[in-house]
Image (cartoon, rainbow over all chains, first blue to last red; front, side, top):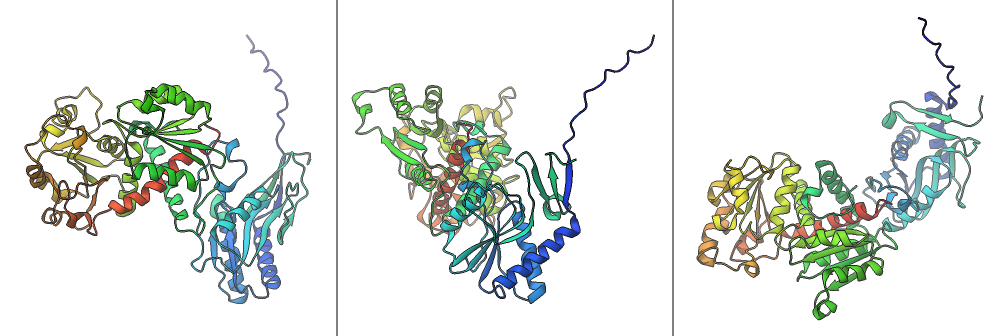
Length: 194
Length: 316
């Protein structure tokens, strides 16, 4: 007796994946941001890089390393956890809080450059500005991001952008870094890309 | 995440470790210029205290305020309780006022559990009779971990009036969960019978934590990483549990001589308030091994972590 033919399975809609930046591209983009920081801050004196966890922290360390390679200046690096300053804390299950490590010299009177992987609604940056307010008084604050995907919900812009990616809200941008995910890359998921 | 914190048994190893890790981050806030976090803005925490307390109430108040919660302090004296209002009616009043969390201390064992059945918000047990005091156990564990670097495998001697001590009970439960070895030390009259028989191997059916009991303090000292002295709770003592205060102090009090028999790295803890000269001499209490003041500081961080984890998300 023949087995009944397998029912035609409905086509599974595979989310499309598009590579925006490959590993080597990420390195080049970080190099360029490092150069831009040096140019715009005229040598990165009195400057502190603060990474926003998770992926902003290794990005900040990389930027500092590149800056010291290019111009031989040591830029202090820190980590600024913004979990407790989020405006959506109560919409999710309790979030684990991450470490905040300020460089030994502190941030008072310094030029602070916040570093994050993706700039989207701007709410993370708003939370970071609030958090910054509680840990000191920087002379000025700038923002460096690897990817700007648009769709801002707050009046916030980045000073240094690695890559502008026009996206739809249905899409999602995923940054991976060797330190946190095993490999560098930026990918765009979903949406209508063929 | 759990909704209430009523007992040391509410915490499994993962949850307890998460609280201690969160507390370590909360501790960094104390060193900042602005000692405040916005995490619990708009939430209300009620401190419901039916018993006198200094450090626990102030500690919870400081913790809630550092997280930007609104704090209402309620002490039984001078309230409707003095007019005869029951715990349930008081609880319903607090409920009607929209308390998101109730921190309760009560002379009756089990009061916090009852309260948790009546209110919608989270209940934190800040000491119920001779039963439990879980945030004290958490801050003790935090202090041990920050001083000695670990909890698993530590030998902890809990010395004194174990019978009446909610601190001891919560500590035994939590420390066993986290892998420390607990030895109860005290006069036989002040060690709970079920734990003593359990330690003697007589009771294998019960699920009391694995503990040992020793009636001789001097025998325990050389192998202890932590000595936790308990207060002799005269207000709970209706019988004569030991012949005299002097005899108790001589056999179970920690003095300088006994302290020098401890290993080099060992620490001395006391949940406070101390009876100086009774269970601990001033020389020990003020020594470098003593973590008594540290415990108070850590208490705020640990209670911040507990309040944040109970109230921070939408899991309430």
